[in-house]
Amino acid sequence: MTQDPLAALALLVQQGENTEAVACARRLMENSHSVEDIVGAVSKGLEALRNKCTVENFQLLDVLLASRAMVEVVDECLALRLQSRMDDIAGAFERLTSAPPRATLVICTIQGDVHELGKHVVATLCRFSNIRVINLGRDVPPDRFVETAIAEEADFIGVSSLMTVCLPKIRLIKPALARRGADHIIVAAGGGSARQSSAETLDVDNHARVEGP
Ligand code: B12
Image: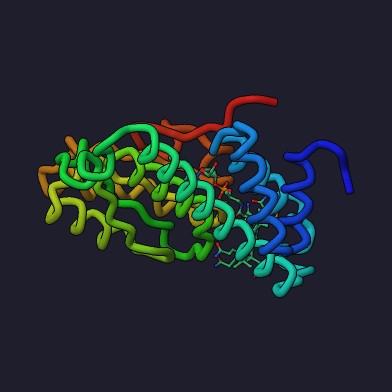
């Protein structure tokens, strides 16, 4: 086992060891590692499976076990963070649950794409920041989330795409909003393939990049 604890967590996720990965993440949180550190490590664990998830070589079980480990780690870490904040600040739970949401976000993965782990991370972090999140899931046609965003008076649409072939669908969002007189709704795109493009090419307002090495 590697000495670097974040690398150890990445390896456990990569190997699909969900119970051990959650225990490892708990220890890291207790040792003051941030949620961002944990998300970075689990993302690296999945990144390592890139070659097991191609059109020619698709080792579904390995990828799904790693995916499960990642979701459990993310949920567990956020639960821990919430719990520690509640312990620190008297009445925090009441404030968190009764304060009006700062904004409303409609989030989904674009039509044709079933990848949803990154979107789950973003949705969970936003919920914890008192943003009202409507998660429409994966493989969602642009018209559906545009209609939902208007009906729910959303401030933001977050669209995720990991499949390059699905990127053109993202370009349909802003025109669909404009046709309905709702171009004040801010559109942000993220996910592996969106990251390799640009806000201009995707015709969105914001484009999530990953900073760092
Ligand atoms: C896990 C995985 C799967 C799982 C998904 C499980 C699930 N429930 O989501 C399964 C097994 C289903 C799968 C299927 C396939 N996959 Co796959 N998969 C992956 C893998 C290994 C990891 C993706 C992941 O979850 N990463 C971890 C998360 C946390 O990272 P993330 O999504 O990038 O999200 C972060 C940021 O990007 C950002 N973010 C993400 N979304 C959003 C949205 C907003 C609004 C914002 C602000 C930020 C944001 O925040 C997150 C946290 O930092 C990648 C490899 C890779 N390196 O990405 C391949 C990968 C994405 N898959 C790939 C392929 C080819 C496929 C298949 C076609 C394989 C096949 N033979 O059928 C199918 C897809 C079918 C379809 N129609 O969609 C390719 C895509 C190539 C491309 N560029 O088009 C990749 C890149 C692997 C490769 N070969 O290089 N896959």
